[in-house]
Length: 142
Image (spheres, helix red, strand yellow):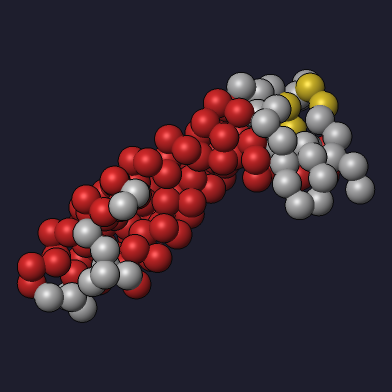
């Protein structure tokens, strides 16, 4: 099945759906620092701040990466395995939609909702290896 992109002509956006999706997005974003405090209770006392900083850094870096190329690479038109860079830097997702998934939420709401899950995934991974990894090592690639 080929992904077809059409110009959005008339889409009825539901304010209740948008509000619920934005509330869910905020809750997932709040889960990231809460996850840091959870993992902070599992590590030594000296590593609690390190774990919190790992999660905060994930929130900043991954959100920027998601907006620049992650959304396009995941949801852009392409083959079955990878998307494309057609929507990179969020150029077109506000004007186009997929006919098979005609949603009642705005495309930017969908981008932010998916971004929240892109942020919490590396935060989960950093919690698993927090006793092995320091924030300096994460940022310096050594």
